[in-house]
Amino acid sequence: MHGTGPPLVTPFDADGALDVDALRDLVDWVEARGIDFLVPCGSNSEAELMAAEERARVIEVVADAASVPVLAGTGSPGKRETLEATAAAADAGADAALVVTPFYYDHDQATLETYYREVADESPVPVYLYSVPVFTDASLDPETVGRLAAHPNVAGMKDSSGDIAAFQRIRERTATADFDLMVGSGGVLGQALAAGGTGGVLALANIAPEATAAIYEASEAGDRERARELTAACVDLNHAITAEYGIPGLKYAMRQRGAPAGHARSPHRAPEADARAALDELLGDLDDLLAGV
Image 1 (spheres, helix red, strand yellow):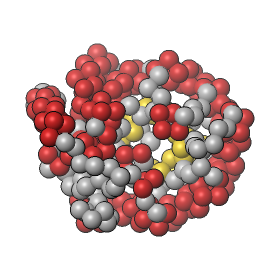
Image 2 (image 1 turned 120 degrees about the horizontal axis):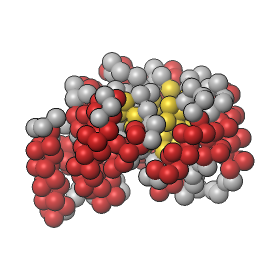
Image 3 (image 1 turned 90 degrees about the horizontal axis):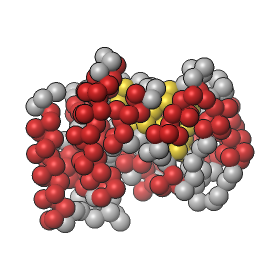
Image 4 (image 1 turned 90 degrees about the vertical axis):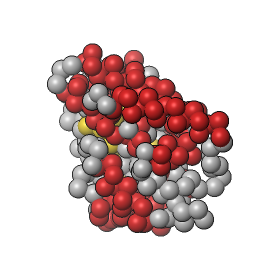
Protein backbone atom coordinates (compact mmCIF):
# COMPACT_ATOMS: atom_id res chain seq x y z
CA MET A 1 0.00 0.00 0.00
CA HIS A 2 1.35 3.40 -1.03
CA GLY A 3 -0.21 6.81 -0.50
CA THR A 4 -2.75 7.67 2.16
CA GLY A 5 -5.78 5.81 3.43
CA PRO A 6 -8.24 6.32 6.28
CA PRO A 7 -8.93 3.82 9.05
CA LEU A 8 -12.47 4.27 7.81
CA VAL A 9 -15.05 5.23 10.42
CA THR A 10 -18.06 2.94 10.62
CA PRO A 11 -21.38 4.77 10.31
CA PHE A 12 -23.92 3.68 12.92
CA ASP A 13 -27.46 4.99 13.14
CA ALA A 14 -28.84 6.70 16.25
CA ASP A 15 -29.66 3.30 17.77
CA GLY A 16 -26.14 1.94 17.21
CA ALA A 17 -26.96 -0.30 14.25
CA LEU A 18 -24.64 -0.52 11.24
CA ASP A 19 -25.79 1.84 8.47
CA VAL A 20 -24.78 -0.03 5.32
CA ASP A 21 -26.02 2.64 2.91
CA ALA A 22 -24.06 5.35 4.70
CA LEU A 23 -20.95 3.15 4.67
CA ARG A 24 -21.19 2.76 0.90
CA ASP A 25 -21.68 6.51 0.51
CA LEU A 26 -18.69 7.16 2.77
CA VAL A 27 -16.46 5.01 0.56
CA ASP A 28 -17.49 7.18 -2.39
CA TRP A 29 -16.93 10.39 -0.36
CA VAL A 30 -13.33 9.66 0.64
CA GLU A 31 -12.42 8.13 -2.73
CA ALA A 32 -13.63 11.25 -4.53
CA ARG A 33 -11.25 13.32 -2.37
CA GLY A 34 -8.05 11.52 -3.24
CA ILE A 35 -7.41 8.61 -0.89
CA ASP A 36 -5.34 5.70 -2.25
CA PHE A 37 -6.65 2.77 -0.23
CA LEU A 38 -9.18 2.01 2.51
CA VAL A 39 -8.78 0.45 5.95
CA PRO A 40 -12.06 -0.87 7.36
CA CYS A 41 -12.06 -2.19 10.93
CA GLY A 42 -9.12 -0.10 12.07
CA SER A 43 -8.87 1.74 15.38
CA ASN A 44 -11.08 4.63 14.24
CA SER A 45 -13.63 2.17 12.86
CA GLU A 46 -14.79 1.16 16.36
CA ALA A 47 -13.91 -2.41 15.42
CA GLU A 48 -13.51 -3.39 19.07
CA LEU A 49 -17.15 -2.44 19.63
CA MET A 50 -18.38 -4.77 16.89
CA ALA A 51 -19.05 -8.50 16.83
CA ALA A 52 -16.99 -10.63 14.47
CA GLU A 53 -19.92 -10.98 12.09
CA GLU A 54 -20.37 -7.21 11.97
CA ARG A 55 -16.68 -6.65 11.19
CA ALA A 56 -16.87 -9.17 8.37
CA ARG A 57 -19.96 -7.40 7.01
CA VAL A 58 -18.23 -3.99 7.15
CA ILE A 59 -15.26 -5.35 5.20
CA GLU A 60 -17.58 -6.96 2.65
CA VAL A 61 -19.49 -3.72 2.09
CA VAL A 62 -16.30 -1.64 1.78
CA ALA A 63 -14.62 -4.12 -0.57
CA ASP A 64 -17.72 -4.24 -2.77
CA ALA A 65 -18.01 -0.45 -2.94
CA ALA A 66 -14.31 0.37 -3.27
CA SER A 67 -12.33 1.00 -6.43
CA VAL A 68 -9.05 1.16 -4.47
CA PRO A 69 -7.23 -1.55 -2.48
CA VAL A 70 -8.68 -2.62 0.86
CA LEU A 71 -6.46 -3.27 3.88
CA ALA A 72 -8.73 -4.81 6.51
CA GLY A 73 -8.10 -4.77 10.24
CA THR A 74 -8.25 -8.35 11.51
CA GLY A 75 -6.11 -8.48 14.66
CA SER A 76 -7.31 -9.87 17.99
CA PRO A 77 -5.50 -10.83 21.21
CA GLY A 78 -5.32 -14.48 20.12
CA LYS A 79 -4.00 -16.17 16.98
CA ARG A 80 -7.10 -18.30 16.42
CA GLU A 81 -9.42 -15.29 16.36
CA THR A 82 -7.01 -13.33 14.17
CA LEU A 83 -6.76 -16.11 11.60
CA GLU A 84 -10.54 -16.57 11.53
CA ALA A 85 -11.04 -12.84 11.00
CA THR A 86 -8.32 -12.73 8.34
CA ALA A 87 -9.89 -15.62 6.42
CA ALA A 88 -13.28 -13.92 6.62
CA ALA A 89 -11.79 -10.65 5.39
CA ALA A 90 -10.13 -12.41 2.45
CA ASP A 91 -13.44 -14.09 1.58
CA ALA A 92 -15.13 -10.67 1.75
CA GLY A 93 -12.72 -9.22 -0.80
CA ALA A 94 -9.96 -7.61 1.25
CA ASP A 95 -6.58 -7.35 -0.47
CA ALA A 96 -4.49 -7.53 2.72
CA ALA A 97 -4.82 -7.76 6.50
CA LEU A 98 -3.71 -5.21 9.10
CA VAL A 99 -2.88 -7.20 12.24
CA VAL A 100 -2.45 -5.30 15.49
CA THR A 101 -0.02 -6.53 18.12
CA PRO A 102 -1.74 -8.92 20.54
CA PHE A 103 -3.06 -6.94 23.48
CA TYR A 104 -4.36 -7.42 27.03
CA TYR A 105 -1.56 -9.79 28.08
CA ASP A 106 2.10 -8.79 28.03
CA HIS A 107 4.30 -10.44 25.40
CA ASP A 108 8.02 -10.09 24.77
CA GLN A 109 9.52 -9.46 21.34
CA ALA A 110 10.30 -13.13 20.70
CA THR A 111 6.66 -14.05 21.34
CA LEU A 112 5.40 -11.27 19.08
CA GLU A 113 7.76 -12.33 16.30
CA THR A 114 6.61 -15.94 16.54
CA TYR A 115 2.98 -14.87 16.54
CA TYR A 116 3.35 -12.80 13.38
CA ARG A 117 5.27 -15.55 11.60
CA GLU A 118 2.54 -18.05 12.39
CA VAL A 119 -0.20 -15.66 11.27
CA ALA A 120 1.67 -14.84 8.06
CA ASP A 121 2.28 -18.53 7.38
CA GLU A 122 -1.46 -19.23 7.39
CA SER A 123 -2.95 -15.99 6.12
CA PRO A 124 -4.51 -16.18 2.63
CA VAL A 125 -3.63 -12.49 2.02
CA PRO A 126 -0.52 -10.40 2.73
CA VAL A 127 -0.11 -9.32 6.34
CA TYR A 128 0.72 -5.81 7.55
CA LEU A 129 2.10 -5.41 11.06
CA TYR A 130 0.38 -2.82 13.24
CA SER A 131 2.02 -1.23 16.26
CA VAL A 132 -0.16 1.19 18.25
CA PRO A 133 1.23 1.30 21.80
CA VAL A 134 -1.20 3.99 22.99
CA PHE A 135 -3.99 1.38 22.79
CA THR A 136 -2.11 -1.89 23.35
CA ASP A 137 0.80 -0.90 25.60
CA ALA A 138 2.94 -2.99 23.25
CA SER A 139 5.25 -2.03 20.41
CA LEU A 140 7.38 -3.81 17.86
CA ASP A 141 11.10 -3.13 18.11
CA PRO A 142 12.81 -2.10 14.86
CA GLU A 143 14.96 -5.23 15.02
CA THR A 144 11.87 -7.44 15.28
CA VAL A 145 10.29 -5.69 12.32
CA GLY A 146 13.49 -6.08 10.32
CA ARG A 147 13.45 -9.84 10.78
CA LEU A 148 9.72 -10.14 10.03
CA ALA A 149 10.13 -8.09 6.84
CA ALA A 150 11.96 -11.04 5.30
CA HIS A 151 8.84 -13.23 5.57
CA PRO A 152 7.31 -13.60 2.08
CA ASN A 153 3.78 -12.89 3.35
CA VAL A 154 4.63 -9.90 5.56
CA ALA A 155 4.08 -6.95 3.23
CA GLY A 156 4.50 -3.93 5.46
CA MET A 157 3.65 -2.12 8.65
CA LYS A 158 1.57 0.67 10.13
CA ASP A 159 3.58 2.38 12.86
CA SER A 160 1.41 4.49 15.16
CA SER A 161 4.04 5.14 17.80
CA GLY A 162 4.54 8.73 16.64
CA ASP A 163 8.27 8.22 17.20
CA ILE A 164 10.05 9.38 14.04
CA ALA A 165 13.44 8.14 15.30
CA ALA A 166 12.03 4.64 15.72
CA PHE A 167 10.33 4.96 12.32
CA GLN A 168 13.70 5.74 10.73
CA ARG A 169 15.30 2.77 12.46
CA ILE A 170 12.55 0.51 11.10
CA ARG A 171 13.12 1.88 7.60
CA GLU A 172 16.86 1.21 7.88
CA ARG A 173 16.20 -2.38 8.93
CA THR A 174 13.68 -3.04 6.16
CA ALA A 175 15.42 -1.12 3.35
CA THR A 176 16.38 -4.23 1.38
CA ALA A 177 12.96 -5.89 1.72
CA ASP A 178 9.82 -5.38 -0.35
CA PHE A 179 8.15 -3.75 2.63
CA ASP A 180 5.64 -0.89 2.82
CA LEU A 181 6.23 1.30 5.86
CA MET A 182 3.28 3.54 6.71
CA VAL A 183 2.89 6.02 9.51
CA GLY A 184 -0.24 6.09 11.65
CA SER A 185 -0.16 9.70 12.84
CA GLY A 186 -1.25 12.56 10.59
CA GLY A 187 0.73 14.97 12.74
CA VAL A 188 4.04 13.56 11.45
CA LEU A 189 3.07 12.47 7.93
CA GLY A 190 5.45 14.81 6.11
CA GLN A 191 8.36 13.86 8.36
CA ALA A 192 7.65 10.14 8.00
CA LEU A 193 7.54 10.36 4.21
CA ALA A 194 10.86 12.21 4.27
CA ALA A 195 12.24 9.38 6.41
CA GLY A 196 11.38 6.82 3.74
CA GLY A 197 7.77 6.02 4.53
CA THR A 198 5.54 4.83 1.72
CA GLY A 199 2.37 6.45 3.02
CA GLY A 200 0.04 6.70 5.97
CA VAL A 201 -3.05 5.14 7.56
CA LEU A 202 -4.47 8.26 9.13
CA ALA A 203 -7.55 9.31 11.10
CA LEU A 204 -6.93 12.67 9.41
CA ALA A 205 -7.68 11.06 6.03
CA ASN A 206 -11.29 10.55 7.17
CA ILE A 207 -11.92 14.25 7.67
CA ALA A 208 -9.31 15.85 5.37
CA PRO A 209 -8.48 13.35 2.63
CA GLU A 210 -7.63 16.21 0.26
CA ALA A 211 -4.97 17.46 2.68
CA THR A 212 -3.35 14.08 3.29
CA ALA A 213 -3.29 13.42 -0.45
CA ALA A 214 -1.65 16.81 -1.03
CA ILE A 215 1.04 16.03 1.55
CA TYR A 216 1.82 12.72 -0.11
CA GLU A 217 1.84 14.25 -3.59
CA ALA A 218 4.19 17.03 -2.48
CA SER A 219 6.56 14.48 -0.99
CA GLU A 220 6.47 12.32 -4.10
CA ALA A 221 7.27 15.39 -6.21
CA GLY A 222 10.34 16.03 -4.09
CA ASP A 223 8.89 19.10 -2.36
CA ARG A 224 9.52 17.97 1.19
CA GLU A 225 9.30 21.49 2.56
CA ARG A 226 5.76 21.81 1.18
CA ALA A 227 4.88 18.41 2.66
CA ARG A 228 6.15 19.52 6.06
CA GLU A 229 4.28 22.84 5.84
CA LEU A 230 1.00 21.12 5.01
CA THR A 231 1.55 18.61 7.79
CA ALA A 232 2.19 21.40 10.29
CA ALA A 233 -1.03 23.11 9.21
CA CYS A 234 -2.97 19.95 10.09
CA VAL A 235 -1.38 19.23 13.48
CA ASP A 236 -4.06 20.91 15.61
CA LEU A 237 -6.94 19.29 13.73
CA ASN A 238 -5.22 15.90 13.87
CA HIS A 239 -4.76 16.25 17.65
CA ALA A 240 -8.39 17.27 18.11
CA ILE A 241 -9.86 14.29 16.25
CA THR A 242 -7.55 11.77 17.90
CA ALA A 243 -6.17 12.57 21.35
CA GLU A 244 -8.57 15.33 22.38
CA TYR A 245 -12.10 14.50 21.19
CA GLY A 246 -11.64 11.01 19.80
CA ILE A 247 -13.99 9.16 17.51
CA PRO A 248 -17.14 11.13 18.49
CA GLY A 249 -15.31 14.35 17.66
CA LEU A 250 -14.01 12.90 14.41
CA LYS A 251 -17.47 11.81 13.33
CA TYR A 252 -18.96 15.18 14.28
CA ALA A 253 -16.32 17.00 12.23
CA MET A 254 -16.89 14.66 9.28
CA ARG A 255 -20.63 15.31 9.36
CA GLN A 256 -19.90 19.03 9.40
CA ARG A 257 -17.98 18.55 6.15
CA GLY A 258 -20.85 16.60 4.61
CA ALA A 259 -19.41 13.12 5.08
CA PRO A 260 -21.93 10.38 5.97
CA ALA A 261 -20.04 9.39 9.13
CA GLY A 262 -23.05 8.41 11.22
CA HIS A 263 -22.98 8.25 15.00
CA ALA A 264 -20.52 6.69 17.43
CA ARG A 265 -21.47 3.51 19.24
CA SER A 266 -21.84 3.37 23.04
CA PRO A 267 -19.97 3.84 25.35
CA HIS A 268 -18.81 6.78 23.20
CA ARG A 269 -20.77 9.97 23.76
CA ALA A 270 -21.43 12.85 21.39
CA PRO A 271 -19.12 15.85 21.89
CA GLU A 272 -20.30 18.65 24.17
CA ALA A 273 -20.96 22.20 22.95
CA ASP A 274 -17.46 23.46 23.74
CA ALA A 275 -15.89 20.59 21.81
CA ARG A 276 -18.17 21.21 18.85
CA ALA A 277 -17.23 24.90 18.85
CA ALA A 278 -13.52 24.07 18.93
CA LEU A 279 -13.90 21.59 16.09
CA ASP A 280 -15.92 24.08 14.03
CA GLU A 281 -13.11 26.61 14.39
CA LEU A 282 -10.56 24.05 13.24
CA LEU A 283 -12.75 23.15 10.28
CA GLY A 284 -12.72 26.80 9.27
CA ASP A 285 -8.93 26.65 9.28
CA LEU A 286 -9.12 23.47 7.19
CA ASP A 287 -11.29 25.20 4.61
CA ASP A 288 -8.66 27.93 4.33
CA LEU A 289 -5.93 25.33 3.93
CA LEU A 290 -7.79 23.36 1.27
CA ALA A 291 -8.41 26.53 -0.71
CA GLY A 292 -4.67 26.62 -1.33
CA VAL A 293 -4.06 23.02 -2.34
